[in-house]
Image 1 (spheres, helix red, strand yellow):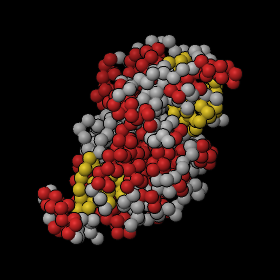
Image 2: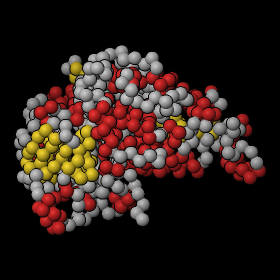
Image 3: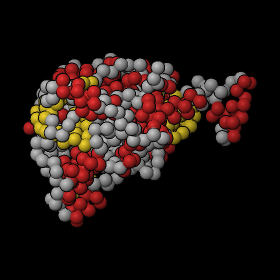
Image 4: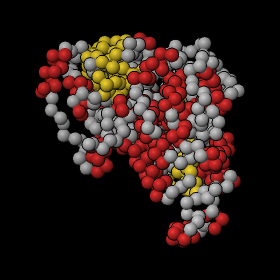
Length: 554
């Protein structure tokens, strides 16, 4: 095998530039393997990626390829949380996909190894992989180890909730400081089943990463070995001409939704899976999520739903062990080809569940239905999404008066100020993909609700989205969003909102006639941002139920 530029006088100018890079003739004759490095010094989940990249380079070279590194950006959602920076989180997913596509096709790489880790970086590179469609393997930076506070394991969601507890006078400043100093003890993606770890685990399920991609801790040497194997494996895929679109089939996405339900992944997976599918030419209708949920038991209660962490999932057998449990009832498509060069069935064979306290057996699940529910009704005609595995049982069905806020900041002020009472339904709108713009995560409001002791009595509904660290009756991605005149824009203070998660419904108890009258009087708002990338993003982005993909208007 050789790369595009190896032979012929026509490519002599290109070879002269490879000479300028210090390439030998021997290197130029081998396949060019692009290694997309998401290393940076601002994201804890990415500060170790330089080590991963070096291991991948070695693996590629050992298997006969020429590794070439180029970068991808990444935002730390935790650092961006609670201020204008969060508007710039989701939007990077498409920047990452676009820039990687540009680099890969401009330089005609024969194969790619993607090295992502945190929230938007993973789906962005999966989208790029589907677009570019050359043999590709993923190896992430790996999860953080759990922190320890007062002898108990903890994670970032506990840190945010501790802020709410301090505001409510439930803990001291010294106790808050202890959380601050001990919650995030190592590099890696935050230690619960938040968005980063959800997407890294689902990368395994989709067949684009090797075993352990989602669960081997960042600080383990096993992660380095995995990276070397990823570099070797991509050369095998190149030889066999196995490409992302061969792997990212409709059945692969059904597998991903199934395991998503079993693991209790972040609601952000309901944004990212449709977007990845879109790039792979697969129409992923979110309504199928409820059908899959009906037949898929929830087997894991990882943080924030429970008190187990990714390191424990890893020790229990990881993603493949979960898949093996599901396969006992034939819930997966197992004949699909994957980036291992083998089928799903071959991959998961012999991967047993080593800890039924972390991964429940298929016959003893936390619930008979999956961890995520898609809701519809007159408040969300297109859909809304909730992580039902992180909802208190008494909150699965409730009615309460709407407390309406037109931005996150006003809602936080009211929650921390004691203005929100048990039984209230907090509505935060104009935070959707267009309205934000950028669809901010509402981790601060949900954490404040929990910290104030209102988690089992107050619901939150938004056209924005939630962090994977959010828990409680948090319904996001309400579509259509307020900025385009969706019903959430028409809700008034005191309207009774009816939530029934078991029935998959979300309604405001206002007549159709009254809603129609309010719609006639509704006027679009001046966009919050009118310049720069966010303005361009707002003009192209679609609704949350479609994955907030960018679409050129006809």
